Length: 79
Image 1 (cartoon, rainbow, N blue to C red):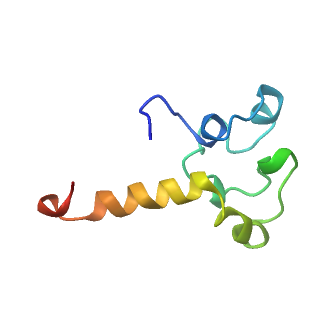
Image 2: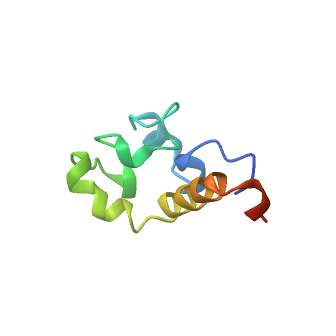
């Protein structure tokens, strides 16, 4: 992930009007799947338990999990 990416809205190329109406913007873009009412896919998403199946298919969610797993590896096992 490029260091310049600050949150899900940049990764997903969300238009400004959507990002500014999204509750994950600007502070919770790294954990948007835990925020109810996000603007994923251009419309307001439901409660977290209801939207989680969609989140698990999202490229941002998968990238965040990959980075998290990498960070948890012992130092000698990291690439």
